Length: 115
Length: 96
Image (cartoon, rainbow over all chains, first blue to last red; front, side, top):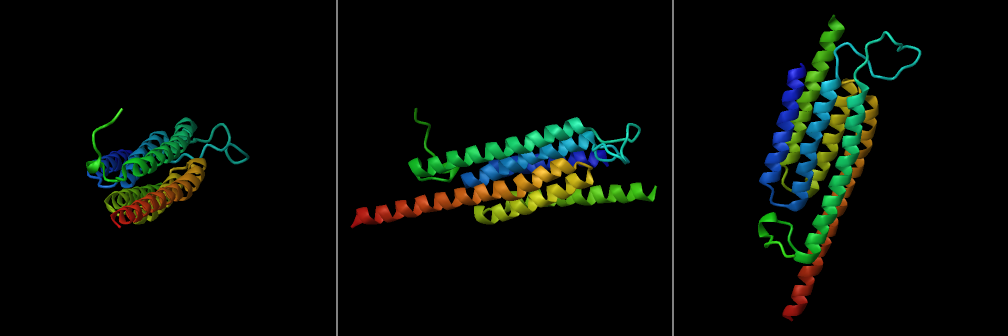
């Protein structure tokens, strides 16, 4: 089961990279990048998961002896989600600027970089 | 014992759904439709995190991944299209 989760994470990462490589539109490419980053959420959560464990919220039902899943990788995954949103919004702002200055959204029609 | 098997089946089904959703998001070529697919993919990831016993991650994922990021994508698409429309009208004026 854990190996299947790792396989899914790798496959989602490869799908995102493939979409990024074959993209004809810069907005499409940015969304593919966020899909590739979502593979890291799956990987992080799957690393911390134990079968039979409950969510790491301690209260009346969950004490010191109850097996819980790893909360550290969950915190990392939460950070990852927020970073992904920030990266996506910044890259889309760059795409809008590129459309303003060059009037292209196809990466193949971009000219060489100008300093 | 049967509960463990049920949990395993749930995890396997949600992982498969996430894989299919990622494939759909990548292979939809038109960005406007892709934003809708991305929103649905965010909901699928939320279900996966709930099944994998990560409720707080699921909360932030349903807020960010299925509402905020698709909204930003749609706004960017509209902005790019309005820029293109303005450029087209300006070129038409120049030809006259």
